[in-house]
Image 1: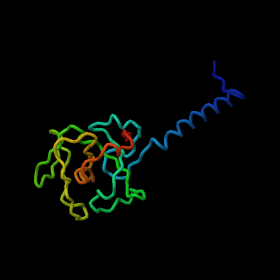
Image 2: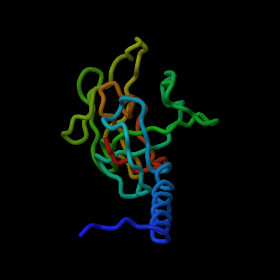
Image 3: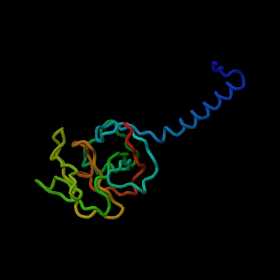
Length: 176
């Protein structure tokens, strides 16, 4: 016995149903997919959700950052700022509120959350521009987070300091 191909009205309804399903899925993608263009984190394609209230250590987050915190360094050409100098950044929560951030090593450039090494603040950029490490340590205050990238060259909280969780826009789940 062979299966018969749908014809006429049945085929029309199948096509309409598939178009509706594709439209619903497609309508969700533009606001949900995020492509990062810098090597700061290990993922290039991320799925965004609005659940920023339950973000904790290890979670990736899209947040807003004032360009003034970039120590005068030029923005990578891939990043756009709004008229107020605000950019969207993606980093991982390295140390969350209530956890203890410490600095050791030469000039306090090695950052730890509890016993977890978060990274070393470089003395200068690859272009030779001097960098100052953020002067933060101790218990992370309520409503704040220390954000880190996965790349040693990531410009993150080691340089711009703590981030207010009110600036979190989306949770970012890595796809690849």
